[in-house]
Image (cartoon, rainbow, N blue to C red):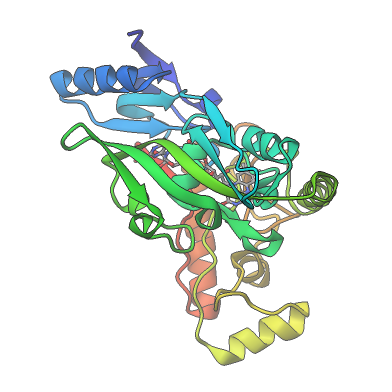
Length: 316
Ligand SMILES: Cc1cc2nc3c(=O)[nH]c(=O)nc-3n(C[C@H](O)[C@H](O)[C@H](O)COP(=O)(O)OP(=O)(O)OC[C@H]3O[C@@H](n4cnc5c(N)ncnc54)[C@H](O)[C@@H]3O)c2cc1C
């Protein structure tokens, strides 16, 4: 298998930041992943599994181990005629937006909310990617997930219950030894025209609200769980919105802390969406980490809330 050395990781991420991987390979099959793991074991290297790179911040010094980019990308649809549920089986390397459009093309509904979310099925299944305000998260669609357990090199199937899904969390996120190989998604029979319209609306909303003109890894922090009734009331009065699942939107906290437009080197808190730290051109990981620390401190000082990163840190 083709394992390359000293490969810059920035181009493999949507943030366009980060140093090189000491070793790097693209795995197009389960066998190639196993070969790569064997290589890492022989050389006593740490392993990082990369999907679409749309939720990562790679350190400036890069990753001193083996990066395996998951490129398994087959998918198959099992249409159930009489039945309202159909199953879409997709490999971890399938691009999420492609799966969304293929499902709609087949007249199925259930993934429209994911339109415009970059990355792969593997990344989305691991992180329980979602857009609650737009109608869903991966946990709503997953029936089961096939993984390779790096511990014993066995292939295992996790049903939905075993995935332990929560807001942006899962058993896979808690155990980095589980490499996601594929997922079975259950979708319902839908109305193609209605789904297409919904997707267009979602894409328009994303364009309006998110700074697509700059590289970023999407929302930087998770929306924190908040019990403070006064703060919830303040948010609801200020925005005219209701809080969802007891979580206050991180962008509101960051904006209220006066951080919109705040810069550190090449990193900036987006003017359009305060939970997006964007790369204005030449941002380093150091610029981003320092800016994130400023945000966390100011939000904690103002609201007593500790923000937690949604973005995955690599090589720190
Ligand atoms: C403009 C923009 C908008 C976004 N909007 C949203 C949104 O609305 N909702 C949302 O949830 N996210 C959003 N994101 C974040 C991101 O797109 C999602 O988290 C996405 O699911 C990450 O998938 P990925 O393949 O890019 O993962 P990567 O960034 O490659 O990896 C993320 C993590 O998943 C792990 N991983 C990846 N593949 C596998 C695998 N096969 N097996 C095991 N672990 C794996 C990696 O090791 C890493 O820890 C947005 C990002 C951007 C840039």
